[in-house]
Amino acid sequence: MRYHSTNNNSPKTNFKEATVKGLAPDKGLYFPETIPSFDKKLIDNIGQFSNEEIAFKVIKPYVDDSIPDDELNRIVSETINFDFPLMTIDEHIFSLELYHGHKLAFKDVGARFMSRCLGYFVKNENKKVTVLVATSGDTGGAVANGFHNVDGVDVVILYPSGKVSSVQELQLTTLGKNITALEIDGTFDDCQKMVKEAFADEELNKELFLTSANSINVARWLPQQFYYFFAYKQWVNKKTPPVISVPSGNFGNICAGLLAKCSGLPIRHFIAACNANDVVTEYLETGDYLPKKSLTTISNAMDVGSPSNFVRILELFDRQFISLKNNMSSYSFSDEKTK
Image 1 (tube, rainbow, N blue to C red):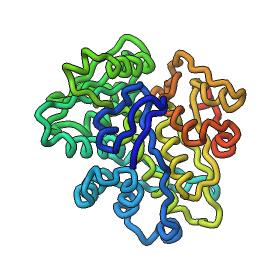
Image 2 (tube, rainbow, N blue to C red):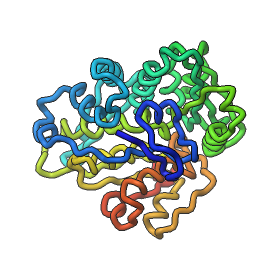
Image 3 (cartoon, rainbow, N blue to C red):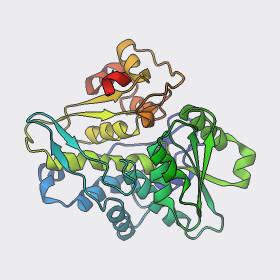
Image 4 (cartoon, rainbow, N blue to C red):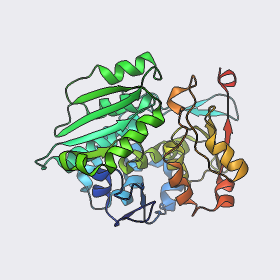
């Protein structure tokens, strides 16, 4: 598997290099050159496979030969060693619980997978890797926990002052050792901008071996497909594919779901459920994509005014507006509606 930049002005690379670099040299996001089609036997008989077997089959085409199979099996097993129950709300509505991981966030999967991939890639390097990450709340805690005490890796987390919960702030700031958290006077978008500027700074990159653990990194983004396969495994009415609503901020999670759908997983439609930060909702109504300054809401982890991964969604559908609308809708909700 090769990866190209969404800006189409950087050399193609493999999974290892895309993971280690984080962001392409032209500041684009890495995107798989081909979308794999999953074996119909996996889909039709998904209940007969363990979660570890499913996750390995899903991620293997993207990793290709960058990691040996036995090592990839170990990484996958350590990544998903907790439950992903699909709970019944009523006869028509079900909820996939993604908070059973080590830091109570759905991002535990991506953070654990990436930390173990990066640990494998750098174990024979003489130079330490610095993982630079922006967080609006839950990313930072999951990344800090996933990378804590990983040899050869230092983590620097930027978080917006007063805009993460007290529990999330404790998750960021209390581990110590190879984890450093920096409180930024600004919004998540400001933190994310600083991270991207750091990757573009030639002098800084001469001094530090930088990579990112935000969902802009393929090793954080791609394993989020696992959720959708685990949900479908538990889906009773296989004759009627589900409609899946995903709380969306930086759009990495729903983008991974759309990728799984394009690879053959039976999902009827996606709904991006947004808070007052409605840039994608407005785009799907008007056709105009106009990033904004992020608004502060009670669902702080979704307070993103310029979602990085939306460019990957556009790439997935060849920037065809109608094709995207046929696969995804979006709705925006106020704090009052959220309550």
